[in-house]
Amino acid sequence: CFNISDENDGQRVKRSTTKRKTPFHKNLIRLGFLDYIDQLKLNKQPRVFPELTKGRDGYSKNASRWFSEFVQKELKLTGKKSFHSFRHTVVEYLKKARIEHPIIAGVVGHYDDSVTTGRYGTGYYPIEILQETVNKIPPHKQDI
Image (cartoon, rainbow, N blue to C red; front, side, top):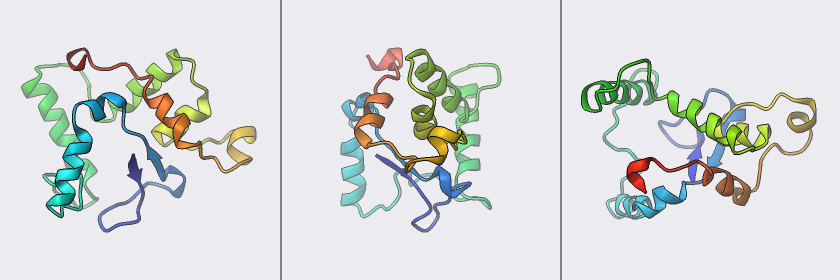
């Protein structure tokens, strides 16, 4: 799982309600992501993406800038696509898969402000439900 938190040096979240664990998609695992993580651990590398540099406000701005340049220069895609576009795409796929709003919110780190599901209970879903949900996102055609 990705552990979205502020527990370690260099980590931060916008608000405490966005702390979460998000499972890896089954295709990410199939493509060798866990082997990559194991290699990082062997090399005592504490960060998943060590090539990212820290900016004044953390790592996200530089990662987003790199992604935008990659999309424009390498993929030759036009339009307003940003790193944040992934979140929109994930929400759209999960809505089409008829996943309940609170589960989608849990996966993408949105605050659930509804009276019923946001106020009562812990607000967290078991990792098995999140794994099942993440795996409903269709793979990129090149990954099949």
